[in-house]
Structures are given as C-alpha cells and as structure tokens.
Length: 128
Image 1 (cartoon, rainbow, N blue to C red):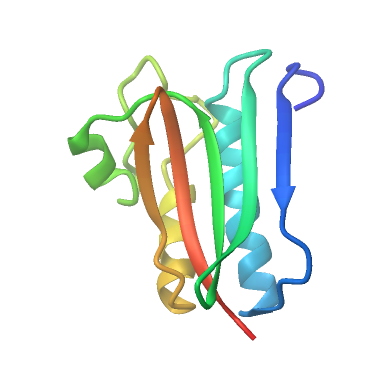
Image 2 (image 1 turned 180 degrees about the vertical axis):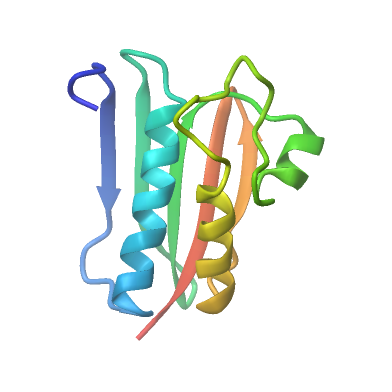
C-alpha cells in the first residue's frame, strides 16, 4: 500500500474479544484487505473498521469503487471477475469465493454493500 500511495485508515474498538477460529479470521481479513488493495487506485484510501454491534464485532473493509446489483450478487462466485476494465491479470477470481467459504464455515455472514462510490465488505463475529 505504501508503494502505491494508498492510505489505510483503521479504527478498531478496544476490548473486543471474539469467538472465532483465529487462523480463519486472519485469512478472511487478509483476503479482503488484499482485494481492497488490488482495486484501489494509486493514492486512494482503504478503511478498516471493527466495532461492537449488539453482541457481535462488526468488521468493515471499504475501498473506492462501485458494483452493480448484478455484480454484488455474483461477487462471491468462484472465478467471477467484475468487468475487464477492473480485471487484475494476477487474479484468478478465487479470493472472494474463499472468503465466503471461510465466512460460511465460521458463521460470520460476509456480505457486500455499495454506496457513495465505495465498496464495503462486512462480516460479524460473535463476542465472548
């Protein structure tokens, strides 16, 4: 991110203890951060937030961009890539499918939401 001039804004609420598989949670966050970095333009900005939401910790990773409703519905399918202008030649379209499977396996409810020219991936983990 540093080499691309991408700013990372992280807001993580203190004293949140999460009930989840540590390795899966790390993998999920890394996949989503890698995806955000791939599709953030030079000198863009990525937001990473973790905050309490009822009895859960809500994770949010956002980067600039837009997705149509159709793209949002397909984004977690294996080998799916958004239009060719966004296609990264080093990407095989598997990262978000793997993220969705990690989410399913750990009951984390991964989803995507787009508004205000931002793509935001959200998931929740149970608090202890």
